[in-house]
Length: 189
Image (cartoon, rainbow, N blue to C red; front, side, top):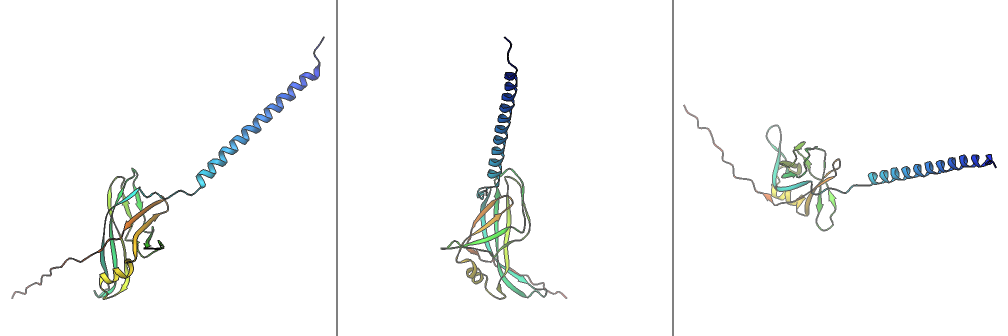
């Protein structure tokens, strides 16, 4: 007896169906992996609060002087020693978001800005300056100006959206100015 021809046709159809099902299953598996990757990479990342660590902070009065050396306004300057705990060098642009946290409510408000752009080498400490020289009018005492804007604030928070870094800086007491000695030239004739 000879084998029937239709059985050969059925084996060919069976192979085609199995190959199609395998290809479809592989395609679905790859699509699921791609979708999981897109979902995972697109979700919001949390702020890294350990990458940049505050080593010290000092607050001082700041006076803006006009062209004729007259006092135009009073403000506050914070000098912050920041440690870059990462192995990567980074630059803090002048345009970073700087806000203060209100005691009690935790509400954020913005008064300060970076003095300039700062380069922070990996595993080093760099002093950066946050300031606002136009908080109060001229002739206002530095302590009075400081108290009116920072007495109800608990900390300064800096947000680096590019690197997702968050820097929390406690607000210190205002450092009183050091006495200055002036020397007057003596005219000799």
